[in-house]
Length: 264
Length: 260
Ligand SMILES: Nc1ncnc2c1ncn2[C@@H]1O[C@H](COP(=O)(O)OP(=O)(O)O)[C@@H](O)[C@H]1O
Ligand SMILES: [Mg+2]
View 1 (cartoon, rainbow over the protein chains, first blue to last red):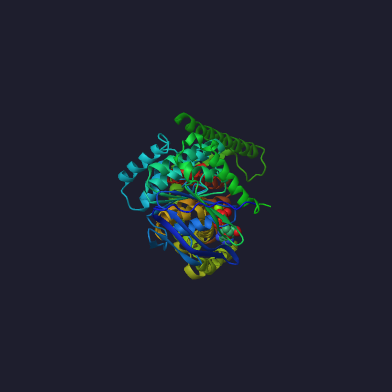
View 2 (cartoon, each protein chain N blue to C red; view 1 turned 90 degrees about the vertical axis):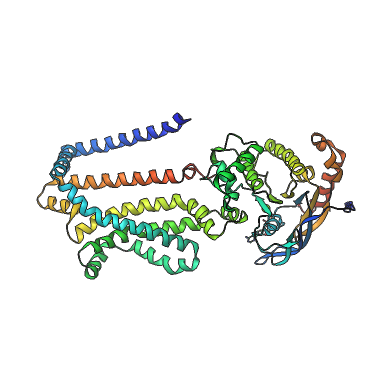
């Protein structure tokens, strides 16, 4: 197996928005994460890629402040995380929409919890509903929507609170392949247009290479960051040609070489 | 769209009427055969009901019966949901109080009535207690179970969007639990109706229970069945009302979970 070629972070590297320092997390006897250290550059999309069970969700929830690490700390803009905060918003794998609430109320829910007045938050929510392409569905209920549309609601909810950091836990894994590709394209333009930091969990190598500025490869037993890959040149290429680009194909191969030993 | 939504309601109404018609028809036939000399026909019973209504006996009877029923159900709903929420939210409270309601649900009520009478006499208090003993356990246990089964992903979602504990309870746990809480309420109300009549038959004959036991003692079976029929009708109407309230309060819940 060839050693992966790891690109050093270029000089004049961007600011770090989130950094996880020496994170360990045990669930009883299970060591989900062990002494993991990772930095997430501001305004970029970092993927956490790895086989299932390697602690991706655990790490994301620790960054979100939903779980406490057994040891180690997470800093967002230099401030230690002690719980959920207004600087981070979560997009859930299973959408986590309120089934009894309309699309409008679901999208506005984050703002509702922040005490934003009804008409103001509904104006903001309506804007993001349009942005994610759900205009006209404000009054629908989640069960009336397809999986892809539900995740758009989840995305609009996370965007509407205008957090600096977006945490996405396999957001496209529960939607069909066509929708997924559309989502990936939309995500690329989102990263470009919004000045936000994205932390994106996936178990799909192709997806990670397609959307990421930086890919952290997590491996289990013991859980750790095994490699960091930056498909840097891809980001300047035309979205339609990425999947045919030699660097794209090389990177996918390289990651597969790293992971295959763990997939017996 | 409005037409499509209204259609199933019409059809279900039609089905309800049809099944009512079937039951009443069977009743009429059974009364005419007759299955027993003590079993009147549907029309005999309805005319007895009419007589009871225009004499005013029925309404004064319901005034007596509804008093302990309404008070008992109000107490059971209020305390039952509150205690159920608490039990569902705190494992310590669960450990402390769940057994009481499980025992209460299993206890043979008839055996407890003499005890209640001894303590609270034969007045309103005892009857309210009977209604509560019948209605409260299922309300408490359903509420507690529903709260315990709140989808954790929704709670986590709330927390990640900065909900405090109170908001998690009021905006997520209670609405998520509401279908099961309401089904507990419906079961509790049905049990409360049984309790109210049981109290009138076992403690002191008043209200509708009095009509039932009096007409039986003078072999006026149509009146007896008229009284029984009226209480069932009232219970059904009340349960339907409860359903309406639920549907208007939590529209989306009626339509399945989004993560299905
Ligand atoms: N609440 C929990 N209790 C016990 N073990 C858990 C819990 N959550 C996750 N784990 C374990 O921790 C490890 C990492 O889980 P997770 O972070 O969900 O992995 P991933 O998202 O990469 O699939 C797995 O072995 C899993 O079984
Ligand atoms: Mg996961």
